[in-house]
Image 1: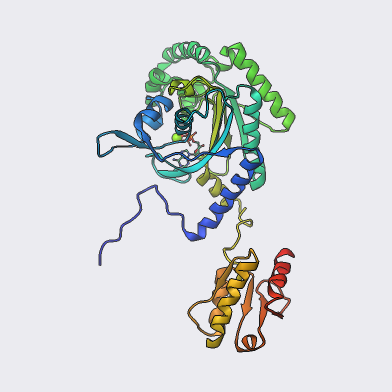
Image 2 (image 1 turned 60 degrees about the vertical axis):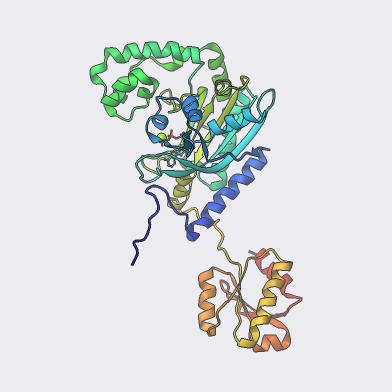
Length: 426
Ligand code: ATP
Ligand code: MG
């Protein structure tokens, strides 16, 4: 027998038994962004490699070791997108969406990073993100955070996520702070792990969020970014905190939160959970006021976030919050004798014409027991029993598979109303 081909490690199929969950999650997201008047943008999955190098930064984990980069047939270097922000800015600049305008955009789709696959970390994963342009004040920061908070509420997980917040200040303030930080780290170099020693020279802020316990203990005494903020960023941050207080959104200020991508300034935030083990960040974002100009557009303020959908789905499953996921079928139509098949089929089409119910028709014959078993497996709440008697009288027998109310027989013209009543009674 030929050897079967497997999917690429870290790239998962989403099987039919899981797609209901994903459609539910995506549906809640679509509804929520609509509530805020955000518009969808769809970007290509492949972009030129330079886009990510110039935006995310050459000395970040993503660009240094996680990108799927390959030569196109004509030799151009292309990359499977590792995130959405760079593409959104590229598209916005290219099509004139950003300059002199305000935009509130969202996207959803697959991202690719060559990381070690583990729970909550995959090589193809999915993000939902929002990106806003042309809005400089803390009110829009608060709005995107409120949007994310509303999602947690809709999913019923507000109690198990917490918002961590920080300000990175302006580029100038951060550059001045970096000098002080590097001085401090140099003086204590012997206490740094290899990773931090390297990062101290390439991307010193990342040492602040090192996972190494002794490095963590050391940087607890390092100069604080919060003490080196420029006045504008400090005011912006204070106003954001105040707005979140007014909206009743709780947060903790985490002065070690720096994010792994170079383009952030001022506000950064993460939504974190303890229910997923090491992969605890389910949503991360912040301001990136310099990126539009850096990628060739006219300068524009920007703020956004990205949410890891696999982590969200994992969380909902682990917390048992799956009752909102609908079974794929509402009504299962049996055909209990040879001469009932056509009548059953026209009844199925009639229901599709006249109701919004999800109707599955039994195919392939078999006795009543077999057909009811199929009905059970389909998850349908209602079976329509159609046999020779029903054909003769042009009626249909309704069997509620979940309730105890027995059988009822209705005419074809009464059927849509009877079923709608049954489902709306839920
Ligand atoms: P982490 O620290 O977990 O590596 P990150 O800082 O690299 O996250 P971002 O680039 O900010 O992550 O992406 C935003 C969100 O996308 C993350 O908070 C996470 O929920 C999700 N995410 C990132 N990388 C992966 C991955 N390899 N697999 C699944 N989800 C991911
Ligand atoms: Mg990462």
